[in-house]
Length: 243
Picture 1 (spheres, rainbow, N blue to C red):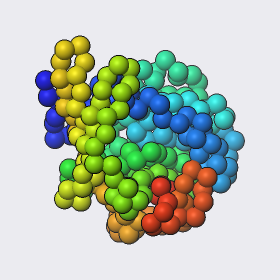
Picture 2 (picture 1 turned 30 degrees about the vertical axis):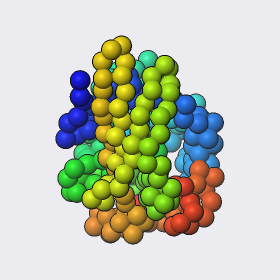
Picture 3 (picture 1 turned 90 degrees about the vertical axis):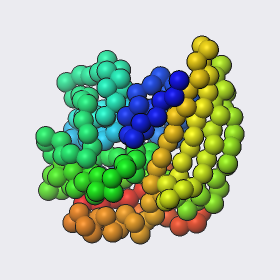
Picture 4 (picture 1 turned 135 degrees about the vertical axis):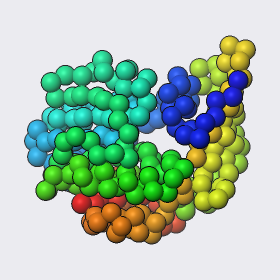
C-alpha cells in the first residue's frame, strides 16, 4: 500500500505512524524554548497565543500551563481530535488551514518546529505569512521556527534506519528542486507503506523576501532554542520574530 498525495502532509500527518516515528522528540528542550520565547516576547499574563500547526497539542498544553489563553489549530483532523481531550476554558483546538486567517487576533502567533514550507504552490507560503499578520493584534508578535536549511543540507544523512515500536523506518534523504526530501518506507502488520516529506529549503534571505511582500517587519533572528545568535553555517535552527 502506498500513501502518497500531492499534499503529502495531509495524509502523512494524519497517520499514527507519523507520531510513532517522532515520539522521542525532546519535550524538555521544547518546553525550555517556550519558556525562553514567552519571556523574551514579554507576552502579558493571560495573553492570547495561536499555536499554528499544533499537531497533537503538546506545546499548546504547556503554553496553557504557563497561564496563557491558547488556541491550537492544525489541518490534521486526527491530531485535533486527540488534542481536544486537553481542552479547558483557556485552551481550545480546531481544524484549520494555516494559509487562511483565523477568526480572531492574538498577542502572539507561533509556527514551531519547521511547520512551514510544505506547500506545492509558492503562493501558499506568502498566504500563510499574510494570515499570521492578520491574526496579530496591534502589539502582537509572529514567530516562525524553521530549520536552518544551510546546516541541514551540509549535514544531510543520505539513508538510515530508525526502529521505533517494533517498526523499522527506512529514511532516505535528498535535495531536489529546492526541496529537502525524506522518503520513508516501512512495513507494519504485513502491509508496506511509503510516505514522503517535502520541505522547501528556505533560507533567511528567502523569508526576508516573503516578509517584505507580506508587509511584516523582521525584528530578531535566533539560531537555537536558547535564543543564541544565528549563524548561517553553524546554527541548527532559524527562529524569526516579526510583526
